[in-house]
Each structure stands twice: as structure tokens, then as C-alpha cells.
Length: 126
Image (cartoon, rainbow, N blue to C red; front, side, top):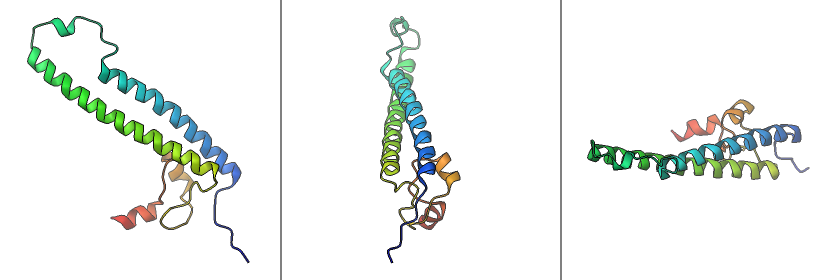
């Protein structure tokens, strides 16, 4: 007898798909905000012509751009992870821990929809 691999029902997968799609949309909006902040698209003022505290402002601005650049990279990775989760929903492997092969709890997946490991597996890594 062939044993069927444990997986979430199609109804559960549809719920998770909706959560993931919502997170992707929000993440894309957040990414655009971050990108516009570090590219200074929104600043057409005269701040950069003012001589007051120029060195400090330039250093601070550079640090801010670097921090925003790092945030953008993290956000892009988050979007990629969410899209990978969407792929797993489509092929019905979503929610199965890659270490234990057991189902990841629904509560965890609702909070971290791109999770690929159960809490049990995460704790084994420590």
C-alpha cells in the first residue's frame, strides 16, 4: 500500500495562498517606499545646497542610504521567499517541514507564511 504524504487540504492551501498574496502585495509597496527613500526621488528641495553642517549631513545621508539599501535587499529576499512559498502551495508541498517531513503548525504559517521548517526543526539547529 502506498502511503500518501501528509499535506494540508486544498481549502487550507487556498487560505495560505491568500495570506501569501496579501503579504507579497504589502512587501512590494514597502520595497518601493524603501527604494524611493534611498534614491532620494522624493527630495527636490534645496537641502543639498545649504552649507550648514554639510559634512555631518552628507555622512548621515550616506549612512541612511546604506541602511535603506540593506533594507531593500532584505525586502527583495522576503518577496522571493514568499513567491517560493506560493510555488509550494501550487504544487501542494506547502507547510511540510523540510527537516522532519511533518506539517508545520497553521499558527506558525499564518505568522511566517514563507516558513520551511517547523519550530521543532528550528530548535534542533541551535
